[in-house]
Amino acid sequence: MSVSPTSPPTGVPTGSGAGEKGLKTGALGLLSSVCIGLASTAPAYSLAATLGIIVVGVGLQAPIITILAFVPMLLIAYAYKELNATDPDCGTTFTWAARAFGPRTGWMGGWGIVVADIIVMANLAQIAGVYGFRLIGLDSFADSKAWTTAAGVLWIVVMTAICYIGIELSAALQRWLLAVEVVMLVVFSVTALVKSYGSGAPATAIPVAASWFNPFNIPSTSAFTAGMLAAVFIYWGWDTAVSVNEETADSKRTPGRAAVISTVLLLLIYALVSTAAQSFAGVGTDGIGLGNPDHSGDVLSGLGDAVFGTTGFGAVLSRLLILMVLTSAAASTQTTILPTARTTFSMASHKAIPTGFAKVHPRHLTPTWSTVAMGLVSIAFYVLLTVISDNVLADSIASVGLGIAFYYGLTGFACVWYYRRVLTRSVRDFVFKGVLPFAGGLMLLYFFAYGAFDVYADPDYGATSIDLPVIGRVGGVTVIGLGALLLGAVLMLVQWAVQGSWFRRPDVPVGVADRETAPPS
Figure 1 (cartoon, rainbow, N blue to C red):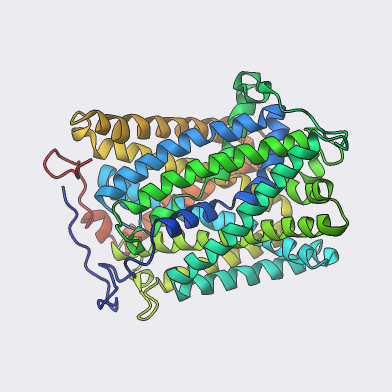
Figure 2: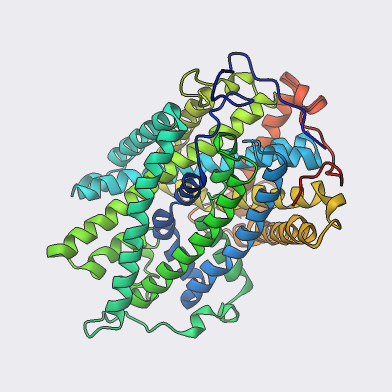
């Protein structure tokens, strides 16, 4: 089944370089796509914010958790690869879920992307603000809520402007920021491992042991699930490489390859850094121990001085480590805007949301209102949560795992259902269009359900809890995560009532790939 061409929205450029929807075609190659996929996950920021949380839950098994979380990510990356080969639409999950299950499911898939990105922008902005002040030695400003909020808002404004100006500028900036990030992570890991085995090793140092990589040593099922949901967060973002598919050369092949390559590279980075950090700092609850609750949300800043020292060249490297987390958060701020803007752009092009979001800049060939709206909504959400409570902000970040599991899992199931008639065509089709995406979808469905209704629902989990009628007291992470998805259902009904053409006559054919029209494998 082929997709009927989507008519370009009013005012979309149709000249040289503009694609079907008006975006700039052929702007990105494989290297740029991989860099965008990697930068979107923000490896340094993700590790800084999450490694301590994983250690608190599973102890010495933190390295194996970071490795196991790679499995569902790789499986879903193959689902993205296969679906993109048939329909390289920048709406990704929105479009593909609509193809497989219908317009309402597709709309909710698109909302899952949008809400997860908006929530995480609050934490990215906060991290960028804090580390920006720490980099220049203004620790008193870094401890001030007002100053860090102002700095975070400024970062969102700057990165929104870069995304507005053009995809090529965005990609060029990502390459440089990612280079700094990866080099510093490797230097940090090698230095930490060398010092762990040296004569001057800290008292917290632990020799690397095979038992760290035994998942059966994890204390409980709930600890495993909570750890996996946290670890899934550190891999999240590689799909940005696919969301810019309409602006990529060889749009049916390059984005899918970039997604798979990105997840494999992330596995190598996370396995190295988590093992090195744990070997050097241990999992204790005092000092530099990764289990210390005082810096569980930011372990790298506490380890910089301990690993590199505070004098001479070591002090320079320690500052570079702070710069690395700053550039990581800044890069991810930018690459979080990219997929959200393109998701809402695609939804508007298909008339699933107001068509104003489908406008394209005549010179830059980037989404205009979709990009600006993402920046403005992110600022409003960040400021609102900061004003309400730091605890609510913390739990909102934890709830992102539910949104990720929702739309990644949906994509896996959409792949299987859409290609169901061609799964017996070849062994390759059966494995890559069927087995792998279905297994990835099942894993993420389990993590979503167990996390939402068991681990996160515990009133003692996280920083907040809420009394709900009939149900009773529920953990704030579950309330925020499920509440955000339910808000999407309400907004979908409003859109259906106001402008319901997408729900009555979707211009993405709903059906199934058949033997004649399915793309060759």
